[in-house]
Structure formats: structure tokens, C-alpha cells
Amino acid sequence: MLTEKAAALRFGDVTTLCAVSPAWADRYREALAGEGLAVGFVADGAALTATLADHWTIDVVVLDLALATPALAARLSASGPRVLAFGNPEHAGLALASNLADFIAEVPAAADLVAAIREAAAAPKAAGVADRSDQSSARLGALGAEAERVAAALARLIAPTDASDPPPVDPGAIRQIVRARRARDRYFPADIFADPAWDMLLDLAAARAEGQPVSVSSLCIAACVPPTTALRWIRTLCDAGLFDRTSDPLDARRAFIALAEPTAQAMARYLGVFVRPENQDQR
Image (cartoon, rainbow, N blue to C red; front, side):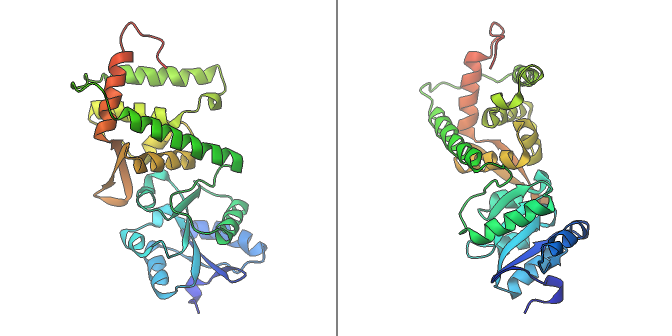
């Protein structure tokens, strides 16, 4: 039996535990109870870690990323519960380091949370970070295919034919490209130009030239897509070896993203060819 503090949220024989702050517990408790569900919550990462250590019948965990801890990450495993994560992307470091978290929404509505739990409980656990925030499964499938295509293309770009050192990168010129890309949004629907991989590459190239670290949340903003979609791209490009991820030594929930060295060299060669004063129509 689970303790009263870790009472279960049950769908048939599937046990789900919500690990959220008291404020979110208050928000979801009534709505989930209204669905006829027995709702149970733990209020912090330590309590969740202890509960998972004591009870092996929990199949799904809903996790507020703000509560993630290194001890919790160590407790999660491929044979453990399915994890539905939500919250500020700034706290997604541990989730990105794991293949066990599905990002559902930054702040899911109660109905969306119930739907995500039902789907997670019914589906077999898959490796990798999924994005369940998109409403259309067709759109989600297309996004996954596009992520794989871009990752493969960039992987080919990493092997340059020119053995010479790439030219230095001018961060001001890159920022000008980014401003031009954003200016299009005043005249055309932004979604017809959605290209999060390229937006993130440009932002990371400029930050590298400026000597500035880039947090996960900052890179999500630069991607100009919903945070859950951006997190999925970051995961894909990290897995492809195009981005490097490092943990914040002061907060294990946070992570910084940078261009992998071969990617940085490929970007420098590309920008050395196309980012010139005479080329004002930058893409």
C-alpha cells in the first residue's frame, strides 16, 4: 500500500503519482477528482525519490521540473515509471540528460494532464524525449522526421573538405541575420518560416563568438517555437553530437548548451562564405 502522502492516481491497474508543488496540487486536485480519480501528490523531489524507492507499482509520474533533483534522476531508470515533465525549460537539465522524460506543456491544463496521463499509461515506454504538446499527431510525426533530416544534413556538414582553419566569426553579423529573420514575422505568418534548428545554430554561434554561455531556456527562446518543441530539437541535436550539453555546477536542474567543436567549425566556414558586407540578403 502507498502511504497517504503518496496516494495513487489510478487508471485501472496503472498507478500514477503527481509530484508537484502545493500550488499546482491545489490547481489539479479538484479537477482530477472531478474525473472520478483518486488523486495523490508528493510535494517535493525528495519525497518522490523516497516513494519510488519504496513502491515499485508506480507506472507514471507527473513531475514539475522545479522539483527535480540529482537523487531523483539517479532513481529513474528505463525499467522505472514513465515521466511526464512540465515547467520552466530552465529546469529541464536533468530531463534532457535522461531518456525518460516526456515534455507535456510548460503549464498543462487539467484536461490536458489527464489526457497525457492516459496516453502514457496506455503506451509502451519509448526511449528519448517526446513532445506531447502539439495537438496534431501528424504534425508531431513530421517534426520528428524533419529533426532527423536536419541532424543528418548537419552531420554531413561537420566533415569539411577544407582543412584550413575557419575564419573568425563576427557575432554582430550573426545577430543582424537573426534580427532580419524576426523582422519577417511582421509581414508574414511566423510559422511558415519555422526553422528552430537553424535559429539555435545561429544563436549558439553568436554566443560562442561573444564568449557567453547559453542556458536551455535562452536557447528555447531563440528557437522561436513552443518550449516543448524547442526542447525536443535540443535533445535531437545533442543526441546527434551537434550540440554539447553541460550541467550547471550550482544547480543540477539547469543545463547549458553549446556548439560541439566540429559544428562550430562548420558554422564558421559557412558564415565565412555567406556573411560578408556585400551579402545583405542573409537567410
